Length: 295
Image (cartoon, rainbow, N blue to C red; front, side, top):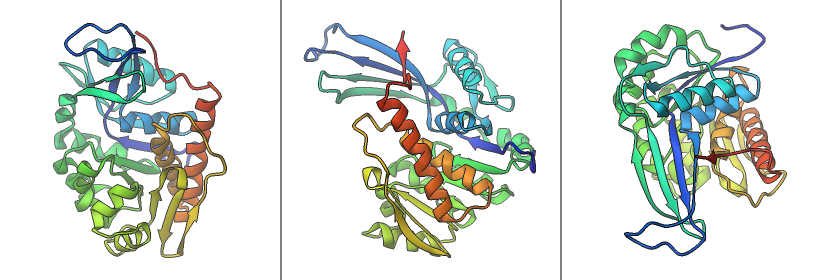
């Protein structure tokens, strides 16, 4: 609840099982390839919730959990990470999975996205969960939600809100929410797509004019550009890493949410987000983060 020492952050979004196949020899089409198959809990909403929980926040994930083995794996992973699923919707059916196959160079050759379960994250579910969400210190909304759900939340959320556009294709779903957002964390491409501008600086100004209170624009290895009514600037990463950067944006969003829960300005949000993103990459570079386990 509000005013507790441990911040309560509501995360509304999806989770899925990532299944990754990799081979050391060139892939042979229409044949069985010898390699390694690994799995890991994933999904933008779940990843953000995990970063929040591991940072000491009470992370409540509002999502759908299937009643098959995928749901059981994901529920166990959330429990191990300290994510609160008490308000999640239990659904009969097939769990969400993302399956990809990678060649010897690490590049993805093909992928299958099975996220039909997200259709069960409905307005009626959000209507029942809304009083609980509005008791949080801040709320994260990600654009894997349907446009209908996002529009519903835009009208009814009464807590500070940060949104993650997820991808260029899904970013436009956030347009009904822009005037309600306390913070937005797009990457460069998403910001330009949402505004039609040609530069990060112009895109940030345009988003502020649309009603977004704080813009924290992720620029990958170049850092983060931030802007609000107090000013604008760039946060440069303190370290450079050669490891895979997957999940760094989710960690940044978690840091932004924590700063937002303390009413931090855009610079505070960007700095907190950068610290959490860098911490994840540092741990991965040092082999301290196990991203997946053999299946």
